[in-house]
Length: 121
Image (cartoon, rainbow, N blue to C red; front, side, top):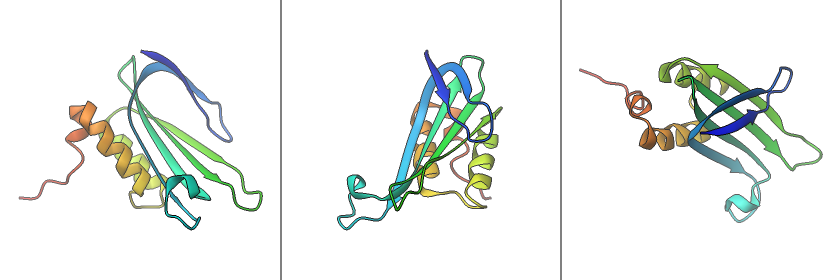
């Protein structure tokens, strides 16, 4: 277990002991298409706390004309809550960085793997 502090704009930061389950990132801008050339982007981290809860941190960053970073985070009780918060945070659809973080977390955590797909009969 490690100690983490996840930033939140407009609220207290979240401090906890836990593990990183998955991370994801996506960006735009630049001319090469490589991450090192992005001028704006989003990174998402999903954690599991020592108490069994989930923490989700989102950082939107920009290097464009004085734009700054934006930090949001949430504490969730279940993987379904994590998914719902990520969809809501991205305006009603799952963002690319969020999906990447969920897929990475699924390799480490069976309960997250179980929510990656919607089962249809």
